[in-house]
Image (cartoon, rainbow over all chains, first blue to last red; front, side, top):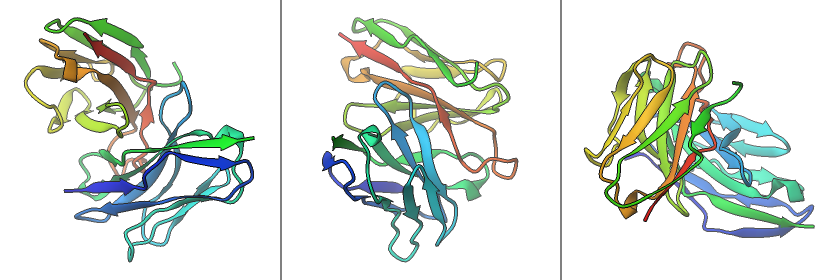
Length: 115
Length: 118
């Protein structure tokens, strides 16, 4: 079945450090890929997305490129801030089925950024 | 309201009791989803509504779980004879609808209802 695998956490970084969070996927079709973020005390919210191979999603200084050849969608940020401390979820959706955009999530990874 | 609203935010119940969790989606969103998030895990799909009908209920763990959306807006997730293993955060999300009608797959989530079964 379809699945998403995220690197093990938690991750603790100092402010202004470079961030990479790995995500790989397995899917029977051609998924759209997403990163969702959950800040403390808040609901899940979309951070960025890419709907086809080689697309790059970006938002708030975060980037991720859809790599079909390696089935990956790694999240990167050049300089993290304390306010980036949150739980990050990689997810996929098989939109081509037309019937729905059901998301399959990874386990999530907790990022803590120290001042 | 502007976002997806879920009530209650917290529910503590005893094993064997019946529980209802409510979700009020974003106005105009025809698609509604329920997910369950256990501690340390990502959200797991339970059920999806397109309008009033349950288009995909493949994620419901057993027949103790049931959800309705009678008027195509508010949805209620119902859990009968609760068990300790049902303890989790239950998330509701909504989206514009089917692919090709302006959706890119983005789901808008509520803050969740935390269920604790003692």
